[in-house]
Image (cartoon, rainbow, N blue to C red; front, side, top):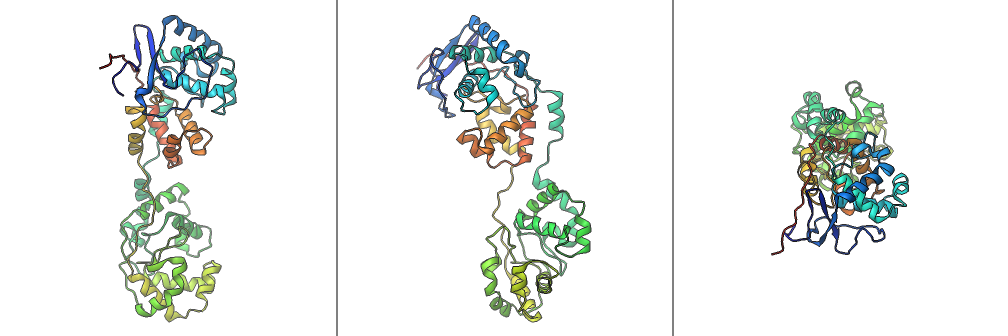
Length: 411
């Protein structure tokens, strides 16, 4: 933010905070507010006296404390703390609720008949309070935060290495490599063993106790490993297999690299596993009508040749985004919301020590589009459910700090 008189101040009982340059003062009629983060020098100062803060307290006690708690510290699930929140943000949000832009009937009704002067004073009052601090409940939730999916997947996959090789590169004939597979296909294939669609007693017994979350993490872990060909023999005529594979490219891709997440890549796969799978499709012991029709006319020599050909090809990594860790996510969030969620932008909320259940609720609203913000929609669209819980838990346990805004003379 450039140094100018268009800044904010909380000193000696006087609260000063910013408005947008499109212009409004507390006496103007409420209008929906659209704020672009980072437009720092389009602010001008508005002053709230100690008397106005006291008047804001009276309005808050009449209209807000039942949900938001005494002194702005909420004890109600899904309802945010307001104490110590940034005043410009509070005022803009109150105006948005009043205009119906937020789509929250309870809040809309609570502020519907309040004047903009009253909203200004309420925002000033809550901003003047000591911020809430982390609760024992949110601290316990933070302690049980979900681990990084890649590391969790690696740990869960430890029992797979004996058959499928380190990092999923098979060294055992008739046992598939697990690298180079899209997670969507991997999960579907493993579940087919679990429900009996694919017949394999050992696989069925081993995965019976694997939770869906662990299976998803295992799939991500293998998808992100550096792909390499299976280190197993490849009996068969590779040249003949290449000619026979012409009809497979439509589904499994040129050079055996699939472009469809639901269809497996075959490049670099163990040759004898591929042959065994084709035989299973052919005799119906593995269920898939498309593959059964494709395999029906293949004799055993062609099946071996196909396995040999695909085993020689170089596998490629699937096109998936590596999940961010909670630490990586918080680095992104802190760019706007301040270090450890202590916002220094008057229009952006502080997250430190906010209720975790409220933050989860808001992130879900941005993900679903029921709460509108282009910036937050872009960020939250990539979040998994575990990311939402971990971020909420992280910020709920940060120490909240008040921010002092100072006016400085223009250069």
